[in-house]
Amino acid sequence: MPEFVRPVAREGVVAMEGYHSPQMDVDVRLNTNESPVAPPEAFRTAVADMVADVSWNRYPDRPATALRTALADAHGVAPEQVFAANGSNEVLQSLQLAYGGPGRCAAVFEPTYAMYAQIARTTGTGVLRGSRDADHRLVADDVLSLVADQQPALVFLCSPNNPTGTVDPVELVTAVVDVAAGYGGLVVVDEAYGQFASTSAVDLLAEDRPLVVSRTFSKTWAMAGARLGYLLAPSWCVAELEKVVLPYHLDTLKQAVGVLALQHGAAMDDRVADLVAERTRVAAALDALPVTAWPSEANFILFRPEAGPGSPSGGRWGNDVWQALVDRSVLVRDFTTMAGIEGCLRVTIGTADENDRFIAALHEILGGPLGEASENPPTQPDPNGQEA
Ligand SMILES: *Cc1c(COP(=O)(O)O)cnc(C)c1O
Image (tube, rainbow, N blue to C red; front, side, top):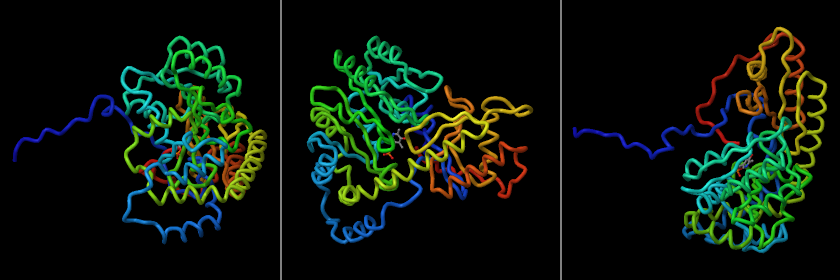
């Protein structure tokens, strides 16, 4: 046998930890901000009918004309101002491939969606880290001076912000865009949870503004399994993004699925309204418990269990509560060790039943000694992590 020298991945990749959120075998999964229910029956039937007509032997329509036109109509923009991709993660990656890269920087305001920094590493883009105030809001002066002084090629805003649920005021987004416009920076507003919120940056879009808004079918459209996201942007930006994606990256089936989904917008809106109502109910229930919860305009709520006498302090207490929830077959996302939100957990809004299970479990845990009422043995993490 000749000598075997195992190839080493390039610098930066070796040290990376793949971004993941552990999955476990539990009854109530409230950890990845998915929709708790499937898309409407009528949509699923339409998809089944459509599949029979797919031209499998042909390459997809490369510019995804029908899908982009339907998305453009839905948002009142031109098809040239729409870029569709495999989940908004591919949108975010395309932005960094086109506008980031070696010698360039992206600004992020943490705690925020971890994929901005993760994709920066895979694309060789530098990361400038800004922070938030104690209630996770952006501080206008800090954001504007960081952008003006460092002139990052990309600025990532996330509104509502994952994992805190915070929305950015439109005036602040406008001010950041104005600063970026002065030196050639591009501002990205990630609105993955946009339909759950009361404000959006979509109305600010213009050909002469360096602003793009990213959206996804994964959360509001109950289609995380479809991997479809899109961007609304000036046409000059879309033209650059088209150059960095692989040819035919959006398959024929997915393009058609996206068009069909948009025909069921009213049913999707009803689901969003249901989840917003449940969010209000869960927030009220949290208010009655010894936790600090932050206002959220997304389909999740960030909260921090407050340690009582005799319980371990800070993040360790939050982690104990997380485990006690798992013991009761309720999985939430553990952010207890994340800088800026130490000790915090994030619960996705589920069905009314799932939310009841979560609230009841939390009552039990915070009302008495931990672990007393455990019915289910602790489960093992699934090594196949999942994003969000
Ligand atoms: C879930 C999420 C995404 C990723 O969405 P996909 O379209 O499923 O890739 C993007 N941004 C934020 C803030 C998210 O929470």
